[in-house]
Amino acid sequence: MKTSKWTIGARLIVAFVALTLVIAATSVSGMMQLSVLNQAADDLRDNRVPSLKVIARLQNAVSEHRINISGAVIATDDASVKERLAAAAEAAAQVDGLLTAYEPLVTEEEERGHFEGVKVAWVDYLARNEPLLADLRTGDQNEARTLFAAANREHLLRELDDLIEFNSAAAAASGEKTRSAAENGMTVLTAAMV
Image 1 (cartoon, rainbow, N blue to C red):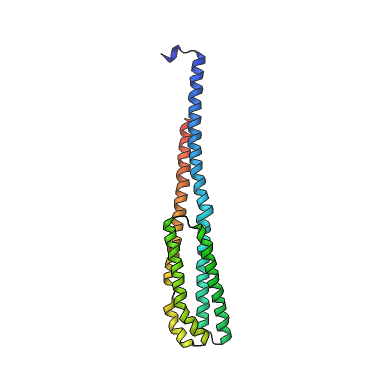
Image 2: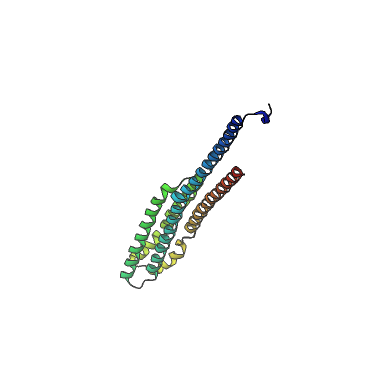
């Protein structure tokens, strides 16, 4: 049947149905792209940004711990040693609290592995510091100075860097998803307008 023999009503119905199908397809595609954008934004807002904030605070607390241990090692009087050891204990408690705060932010197995690595490195760092702290408490500054270099935090810092790298890559992936979804949405809208 030739379309030239169709009545105006039939032509209008076909045009209306075609327009409705284009609008429906555009709407479905748009909703799918908005869903991708929403998921990526949720990941950034609810996970990656808070994770990176907690990690930054963890790095600061670990540094504060080490700075206060250093201060205790070079302190010249018992009062200063006690003051620095108390500050180091506060920093250690802060690290423990931040590790607890990070736990619910873990969303992937790979991230879990990095996080467990940080926790193990923290426990190891504290264990290597314990003889040093014992010497400081008993006033044996010379032995404490000898142990100070062995009780470094390099492994812990590497583990924290790995966790940062993981979260940064995941944030970049979420950003790429939003860019791709926006481009796809624009393509569909442009095609629908043509």
